[in-house]
Length: 185
Image (tube, rainbow, N blue to C red; front, side, top):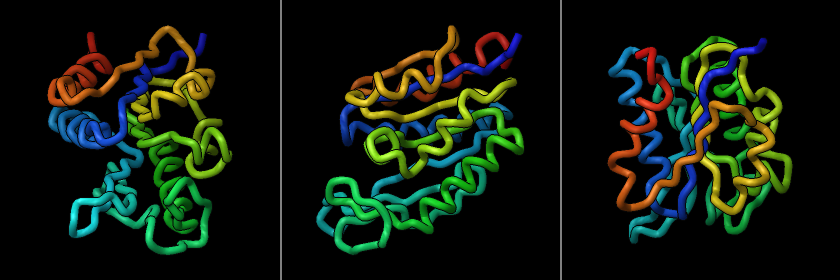
């Protein structure tokens, strides 16, 4: 019988703090001796507080690079106002594949959206590698409207869907870490 780690889909409205929750989960997991890996995508803002793009951040190393922007053509796919950097997407995929093959114990993927589920681009190739057999857990951010499309990629009895809200976002990191490693650290 195949054994898979636990999987959590983190969902919530735009701007509620899903990426901030992911960053806190990674830090808390590290403090507890776990090895998170994968990609988190913090937003970029202009000098007036308007969102103008996204960076990709390697959860393992903390390195950051441009992923998407609104005010320049980066040569990759487009979703809404965002132009994606093909080199940034390639680098993010390499980080995700390395996290899977080198055995982190928490694969973080922020976020699966229209680029993946409607265009088959971005992080879509990683979906074919899920679920990962063994003790690796998975935390995936997904837009609420796309959750039903993503669910077939990670089915199983250890799947949980959590919703971030302004009220829950401070408590969620601890709840997520405890749920992932309940009974074993």
